[in-house]
Image (cartoon, rainbow, N blue to C red):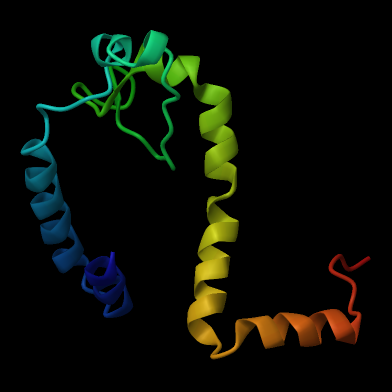
Length: 120
């Protein structure tokens, strides 16, 4: 991700194309693994919860050979989408934690300031 961010920041679109080729080649080395119905059957009572922060490569839907079978993905669609809905907040929290030396103090000051969270 850092390399991609740097390339975009520099406007190096040829570099991005090359990076995508490298990443696709790297992904090709892992085609021997996928979350399949057969794999799910090996879990406790065959009912393990499949989770993914999305986007996922879904076999037969978004690609020919993905990381998860369409039937497994569809069975867990609701919890997957719920998990993925938290992603922007997780990213914002990580940025916040990295940006300030004392994030707890910043949050406390914001609370004391009393500014409404939703503007009308």
